[in-house]
Amino acid sequence: MSPVGAVVRKELRTYFASPIAYVVAGVFLLLLGLLLFLPILAISNQSLQMLRLQGNLPDINLNQLVLRPAFANMAVVMLLLVPMLTMRLFAEEKKLKTMELLLTSPLTITDIVVGKFVAAFAVFAGMLALTALGTAALGAIADLRWAPVGTAYLGVLLLGGVFLSVGLLASGLTENQVIAVVLSFGFLLLIWLFDWVGQLVGESPFGKLLSYLSPLGHFDNLVKGLVDTKDLVYFAAAIIFSLFLTHRVIESQRWR
Image 1 (cartoon, helix red, strand yellow):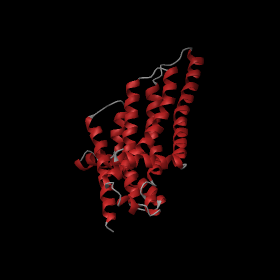
Image 2: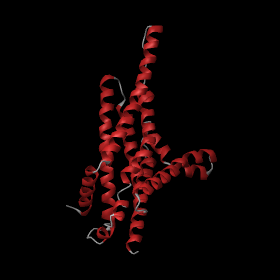
Image 3: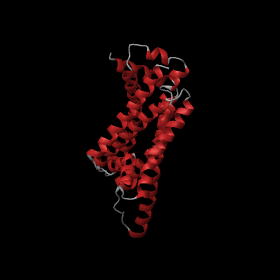
Image 4: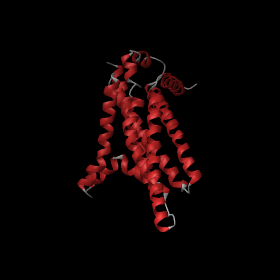
């Protein structure tokens, strides 16, 4: 087994030996279920009213009225829950005094950082795969456009990767898991607000730069079904940059 694979295997065992993954996945699925069910219930009630008044059902675009808002709200849910998946990755190692053993093992820092990230990403991808069951059930009883659904899931997966990489960086900065969650949430909220500040600044180069640095615009394009190379490059660069910073943080702590 490769060094990265060994780290991934160890972290996955830790995830599922503790309640963290189950609690986060349960809350994530519950909230997403509500985000899908409530709009469908509202649309059903409106359709029944129109059927009684006009005698025919309205033409309803479920992609636009149900799935797009659900995916947009899912980003907010991820902002709150994803830091809980990464809070222990380095902070717990430091608290249990196993960080020194990890750093003096044959593993390189790159192996450790990438392995921990891949393990967290695999757990998140598994959670996201479970949400696809609800979307598939909806598609079985309604007419959905599957291309935008696929790009929306890609957007959620990439946004989750950015959140996880930032959370891993926050966990590397402290040995307290609560502080790691707060730091991660603070970092993510900061880059989240870049889009809002960029809109306030306007069409100036600085405003455009801030808007580009925020993941919201890139995520929104994918939710709408628009796949642009600049959006994919943004997500890849954000993940790699966060992992690079995590590498530098862990490397600086090796010599303390």
